[in-house]
Image 1 (cartoon, rainbow, N blue to C red):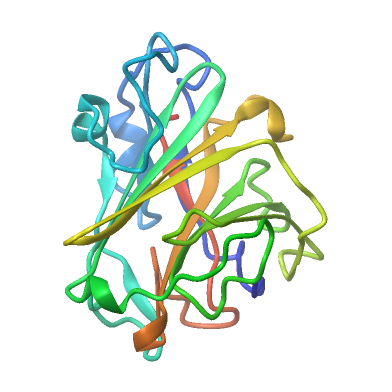
Image 2 (tube, rainbow, N blue to C red):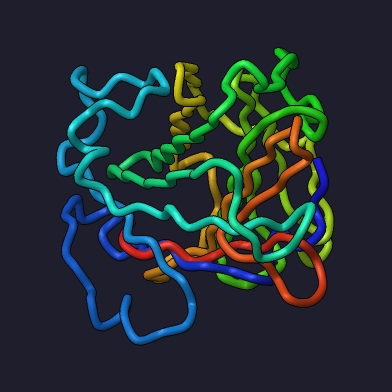
Length: 237
């Protein structure tokens, strides 16, 4: 997986209620800034039998969650409108971060997905990739990627955000789902699998989607200079 630019251009994931188990708003912290933000929705009682990790995003919690829908193209042109909409949502509990992505595709039969093994390079097939920067330093963090078949890749960002060490393996889960509108995935990452700076109210966060047949890559924001992808910041975990 290509790693350059995973961190420098960041959005924000609000994490202020990650361990409190409540979803209090911080509108003053979310509005009035040029840095894009996503407020994660807290699940008060943690994962339950009612929440099934199946890739469908059909639980009521997903419907109520804040979302990002305006990804922009990075390749083949920068700053354009992607061929298919991508919806990104984040839920949190006292123990887990749960990321849900819906990848609309007008030609679901053209989706390219063939890898099955762990930590294979997904660059030649459709996939989504998320980046977490829990230190908000723009130089280190974690990468998690999944293809439409459920194959997973994870890595540790190092070397000032320029490299990903795929030898790092965390305990996490992902389930994908395909239907007539495209594909979707749910990713559950235990907080204990991550190191992070305590006291932060926001983490760096970014998303990238690749549509292989179009050679199209899109992300939360397209950098004007330097590397092609970096995290945004999520508000509200």
